[in-house]
Length: 260
Length: 245
View 1 (tube, rainbow over the protein chains, first blue to last red):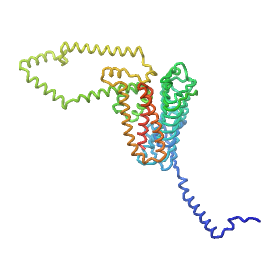
View 2 (view 1 turned 90 degrees about the vertical axis):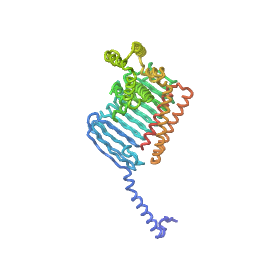
View 3 (view 1 turned 30 degrees about the vertical axis):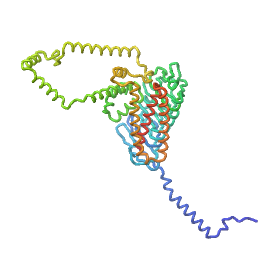
View 4 (view 1 turned 180 degrees about the horizontal axis):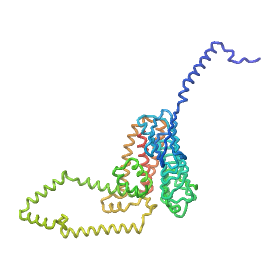
């Protein structure tokens, strides 16, 4: 005997109630749709940039990506999550300043702000965040500073600056760039891996400290001038003529030098 | 800017006379440059010493008036003739080679001997520095600077251990202050921020207890000392920056 589908045998009243229920459910979904659609807000602003413009950004939480480009313009894009933070960039003489912490002080909970910023190649970049990743690439200005107060990864790629400073507590630090003669390079983490990828012909004085793991891998940069101090917790020495200064401290993680 | 420029700014930096941008640039440079940090440390030591000395010997209110009064009393107590003699002697040769200083031959000889002694000491110090040039890498293991050594030897400055202890004490006091500030703000953070903050604080605390243990075993372990200092600085920074949220 052919079995009759269950639904077709339902009495009309039940079918009506089910239909009503579906309409109510659909209405609920549509009612919440604007909330879903506008859970993020966008921010876009561009500024004409003078030579050697300085970008100064202090973020609360979220990822910051800064990229160098050939245009003489600074373009700031940000996606904001609820509750939306206030962003009020200031265009001072030769400096673009954004301070999300200050602009939202005393507001309580504020959502992530994820920045993507384009700056001219020769810009000075000074960025920090309380929580989140910091990425800087293709920057050749005088100075690059990327500090994370707590956790997040710092990635500095294709950097050619005479002063570089990268810091975090929990997270990795990656530097890929050039060591300029007379420059100072400072990398500090509490826990994570610090990887430094530089040309083999770099010339610098090195002070590297990894007291907990004692894992300092110099790779191709190892030479007879290197001295191990404090039972291998610290390495000091010179690479090439020792013209620049490289200081690396990783309290509970590893330090690795890679050839570029 | 090079190290020379930064070193020129250190005095103004210590006096709080720099604008925010320059102050920050100097602070960042000091974090990175050990040579300038040494200069900064020397400056701080000298200033601290001067402040303490100044504070220990407070000048009486209106000291000029006080000295005038003392002078008047002395003059009024001298017999008239003697006072006239003193006055005429004063007019004839006002003290030490007409400079207004009344110094005896013995005092002049002592002064000359003192200058000679100081010059000799400075020459010896300079010679030592010349024959054993400061190795920028060796300097990283926390050697005392010449000024610090001299002050400590003279008993008018702290030794390195005393300075470290004092610094740690100051850091711990600052940490307590920021901890209280964080407690006030913490309630307004979202759950994720609280979790991240606690995790990071715990990571720092692990490092702090590790280096404290190592220093208890070997108080002269320079690297552990430096790392403890660094971890406490990080803790202070974490607390301070999260207290602004």
